[in-house]
Length: 427
Image 1 (cartoon, rainbow, N blue to C red):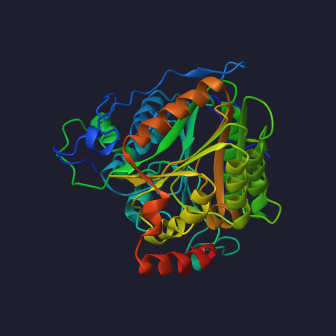
Image 2: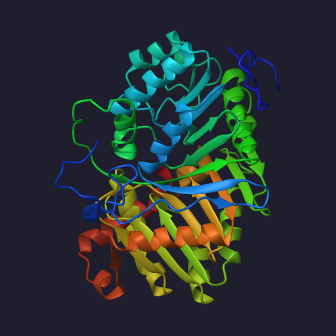
């Protein structure tokens, strides 16, 4: 097994030195989800890349457009592909990518994949074994089966990150897993244009960014730390990376579940720093009291706080948990929207149109106390405007919740929301 280096490599290096597409009647204009790569079927067009002062370029993607761009970059890979993913599904999309990675490995590229054992619990093991036989360097993060562990058994701590790095030249991160509900037809159309029509799947709404230029090395450092932790064991802090989270145009927070994790203090400081506007899009919203208080305090001092939360979700209890905060938040003037027609899975935060956070981190106990998460911090008014535009686009497909309406909700809903909110630290 190889320890991974963050240094640029050539083809001869051994890298062993270092420390479901919808049915035709479901259109994008109905769901607000990008269905066909390169199309504006929901009215959203991928914005132009934003260039930072050091030459790094950042590009914002929505839904399957992210995997469409990632595949184009993987196809052009010359030396190395590194993929860290929570869910590596064995559906049509996952199998197509697995076959593609096998081909790349047979062609002589070094391919590294870390998948989370719990997130990929339903993945076909034979597909994974085929990848290994083809030469893909494959590791599972914290195996769920104790007898598969080389080190301590840690079933509660998961790797929730989504990261891809190619040739130290291009990288990407966000909330998007490797499965058809995230990628749509992006991968299948590219790899198997003559394939039969896939089975229907629910539409998911998510975000990701691509990164090119000098800042990609920090993504590679993050991947290498996870790889080496999985390979050699030790304290989970070995998988942590903190870069420029309080200053600079580009920052990266690869957090790990430790008592001194900077994740919650970082989020609190961002909310406290807001002076004009907070835009929060969050799939799983079940924060602790400190974060809820900061949102309320921001609204009290005149900050326009807007939350985009799921109208329906894959974890229904977390939808209920989020709703348990509505009365309190709205009493302080917070605007709340519930995204309709799709499963909202995005996790983004924009402060004053200048500081944007995009990644895998939810506002719940699991992200803060139990998971390895990855978020990019971009300080750019141009990128912040693009994030604002995307939030306004989501409003077109959302329902605003009003205090008068919320006060008349059924009594059983109130009881359920109260009970779930009290147990949200278990979700």
